[in-house]
Amino acid sequence: MGFDLTQGLFSSAGIDVGTRLLLKVFSEMLDSDARAGRPPPGKVLDAGCGVGVIGVCAAAALSGVDGLVVRCQDRDELARFFTLHNAEKNGVPASVLDARAEPLLAGPAGCRWDFIFSNIPAKAGTLVLEDFVSRSVGLLNLGGRVVVVVVQTLADFFRNRIALAGAEILSELAGSGHCVFVYAAGEVPTVGSATGPGPIEAGPGFLSRYPFYVRASVNYVDFDGSDDSVGSGDSTGYLIDTTHGASGFDGPGRAVTVAARLIARLGPEKLVPEGEPPLLVHEPGQGFFPCLLTGFLRDGAGSGKTPPLVLSGRNVLALEASRHNLCRLDGPARVEVVPAVDLRLGGPALLDAAGGNRYAGVFAFPELLPQSSLPKGTDQLATLWDSLAPLLSVGGVFLATFGSSDAERFDRKKPAGFTRLGNLKRDGFRALAYRLAGRIPPV
Image 1 (cartoon, rainbow, N blue to C red):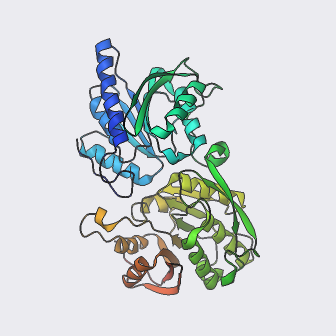
Image 2 (image 1 turned 90 degrees about the vertical axis):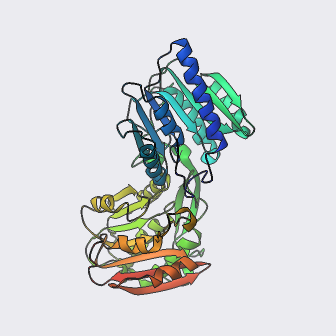
Image 3 (image 1 turned 60 degrees about the horizontal axis):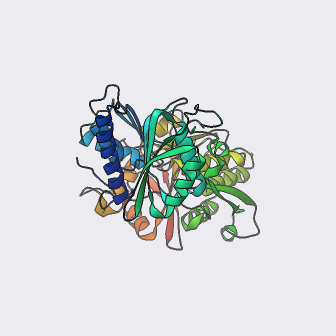
């Protein structure tokens, strides 16, 4: 079997040691089950799938099982994209393997699994790991098993949590830096009962339902429209809940700060035309910028209203944090969330989220992949410009923030039809704003 990897996801140089150890244990389990006359698993979950190595290998190993279902899940939309690609590359049909951008152990109500696999990230957060153990036990079919690989420093933690969940460790294999646990329910709990919580329910209200995902609450200073007020202690403050599994948990960061200063200079009248056209924020992080933008437009326009807002990006946990924080601030009446690797791939879904309308404003913090990891001739900056044609309305504003060198190259590629509204460079980042003067033919 062969797998395409990417520097945008974990273990880009090769299949990591922990995954290899888990697959070794899985292979031995299948052999042991066959000798014992035990039926093979038909419902398999790969929780935190990355590029799909575990889920695709499981699907291939169990290819003769009638009605086989393999669900691969990851918080990163890029992981979903690569998992589907690698499944196709290895001849695994779409009828067998499904990939989703969703939190760990999300799924349809009442769903149970024969096998749950996870190369679980050590940085997920202690409370998230605790929930994974207790919830995974409750999501097993009769005779089902969880196979999880963890770094050695977490081995004692998992032994304790498995015992507290009332589960039984069936086997344990230690490698040089990792440990694989195979565990099962001591008594089969009922999904959704006190002894067996049901699947995670993604969507609106996520952080309220699962507060163990909250990493910190950060006081975020709003600005009053003047350049120097951003980040000062004299302005109105917001309380932003940040989540495990997403970056920027301790503050807005320099990219958001420079973008905020630019929109303060431009003023609300240049950012949004009259009426209530939708706005799009791509890669909103933990929600610092969408909250800032919402408050700025509401207070600056003097109407107390803000346009409908759509949030897009790779990390579904960051998107849910942004939605949560916007709703806490009495933000837009409608907030839609769209997992998207980039604006081009997310284009159709982004238009659907806006009710088929084009956007009056697109505010982006693009996550560019290392050029060395991309096919020869790929131009991410040119592709970003091309993706705007189907998304922006005539007169719409596009604001993007990059590292200074990427911003300079991006500005040089500006196509006809766009005029530059503003440009601000600060602390190694540069925010650029443009207006679409006329319709560009779709690519």
